[in-house]
Structures are given as C-alpha cells and as structure tokens.
Length: 103
Image 1 (cartoon, rainbow, N blue to C red):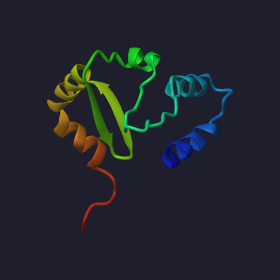
Image 2 (image 1 turned 90 degrees about the horizontal axis):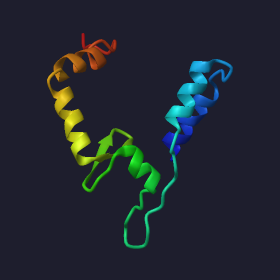
Image 3 (image 1 turned 30 degrees about the vertical axis):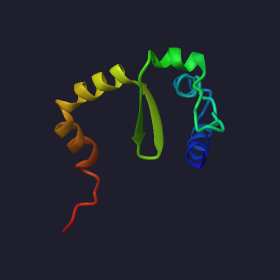
Image 4 (image 1 turned 120 degrees about the horizontal axis):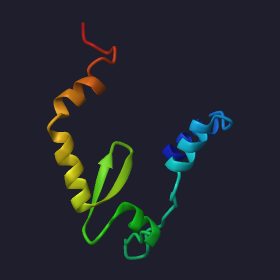
C-alpha cells in the first residue's frame, strides 16, 4: 500500500488543467479497489474487474517488482509470447543505458 500511496502522491502533483494528465490519471486509476483476503486466504476479485481483465477461468498472478498483476491466463501467455521475440532489444533499451556502467 505504501508504494501505491507514493504513486498517488506523485500523480496528485500533476497539473490537472492539462487534459492529457487528467485523461491519464482517470484511465490509470479506473477500477482501482482495495481488496482484503478472507479468513481462508481467498481474494475475491470484483465482477467488474474480472470483466475488464477478460478473466474467464484460469488466472496468473505475476510479480512485477513491487506489484502483483492479475491476468487471464491466456491473455498473459499471449503478451509474454509477443514480447519474447524482441526481449533482448527491449532489455537493452530499458536497462542498457542507465549511467551505472562499471568502469
């Protein structure tokens, strides 16, 4: 929850009079709901979020550093397959020039 609060603080500093900022914030936070785990360790995903995520039956919980993503299994596998082909290029672009190179 701390990570989420930090992210919301950062977004709250955006100029809301800029349409693109407002559009981004609205879309990014659409459907955000805090959830609780029940006494038996289950997590109930609200029906509207199940629908938005296109979850049919099987789900994948994916760790994305400091967040957990909940995916429809087939959708997740499709995205992973699509990005696998260009992963080396993506890794170089995202991680390759961060200024932390060893001397």
